[in-house]
Image 1 (cartoon, rainbow, N blue to C red):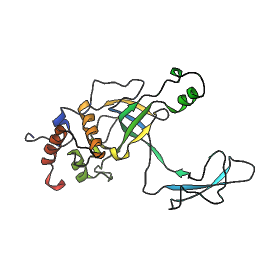
Image 2: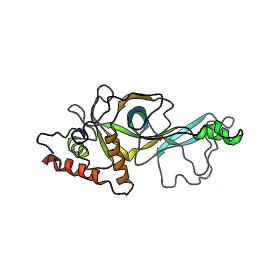
Image 3: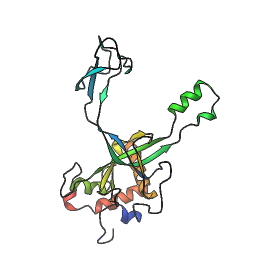
Image 4: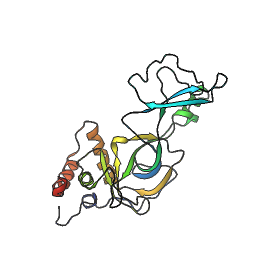
Length: 244
């Protein structure tokens, strides 16, 4: 790497990070940054045991909230039936918080046009189930001088150098990503991007998306390409001493 080359992102290697020429359309596209509700994750679910408030209605319940136990998601004795929740013996009511976050669109899958099927039950089921889907990687902000976060300076420097295949550094970009962040490939989730979402004009360059997909290959237990390995070795060789 040339003397003085920075470690802010992959810009030095890939001749840029964001594509200033692309603009949003009516649908999300791979490489686009969107804002979408992201469920919080934890090592242990919060379970809500639903108890009907009375014997006359299935719409009024009280919830007893507790942490997940080893015997959850198995048959329960004397479970109170709540018709609207439709909890069978293998179901639990799981509670989670959600927050709108920026997300990188990693992949998209088009739905199925119901009108392409003969009229009947199959057409109705397809129209409800097989709609457009998008694989998103949520983006979490890195630490700043005023706010300590999970991704502090040392781990962020390592992420910039592609040390961890489950993380991809996302540089700041105007008002859309006002703080640098990390796209978490270990928290990929599928979203239909129908409600509570915002498409933006921010897109990563194809080379950046290619790096992201190489990292997913590693997470799948496959070997990355020679080009990716070379880029990673160059970036790792330039890690600051305090981050090694």
